[in-house]
Length: 178
Length: 155
View (cartoon, rainbow over the protein chains, first blue to last red):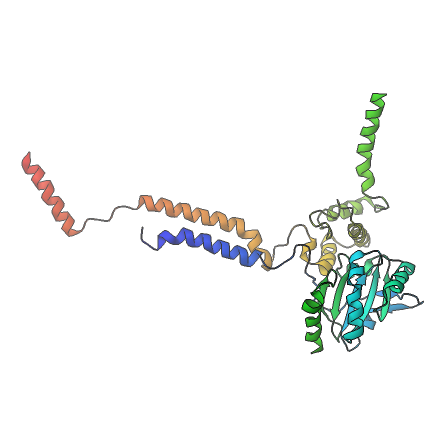
């Protein structure tokens, strides 16, 4: 047995460990499922507008400017928690936010906005939750950043709270406003 | 009285799980289509509870996805197309069984790679014990002959 071949089993084990971590590991949060809609155009929809007798389609999201689409619900506590940050975004970062009320009634959604303020340029009602399924939403809140051409650039899973506004959402917004 | 009570418990415990599923869900009118939809539901992951299929989950989203599956089957979508419809929205993660493709080759093949590695290891270990001794060098041969000769002459 020569010196080198003695190390073959050790090398095999090390190679397998490395392979395992590079192929199966990664920085994924088991709760947060990566969106498959990144770099794809916004899904088509046709939803009623809150407080108006009007139906709105996905064309409203293609404005030549970045847009945020925020799925929320009046019954959702994390949505309440991120609301302050949405107000801040709407007021100071020059990006319009379209709200989609998920499985909510127009009355309750209106009460929610009257109470906490309305950061949205437009609120749409997804009462049966079908539009959310087309966006791959697994629960509210989820926020999508759309570029000027209507391509989905980023999905923020969960509430925009703590430092996730500065650390995650704003850098992405700057990237596409560039 | 006691027997009646235990009978009641039995009835309730059998009936409760039945109530848990399909509270306001209508199975498809065509039993064959319903069977197709049901078997698909077993393959689709509940994205809220994650380690359950939408068939055994009570989550709201699972209920909606069951409805979607039934609708797609009712309009004549093949199981393959229904799966593709959901993968388009939620990614491969929505399937409980990961598909065999480039990003999952390692996942699927790693047990076989592992067996192969063990096999090679065993082979190497065996070879180590069965390597025939190297032939004697001329020097050694001369010494051996000398030894043998001296033994012969002593007899």
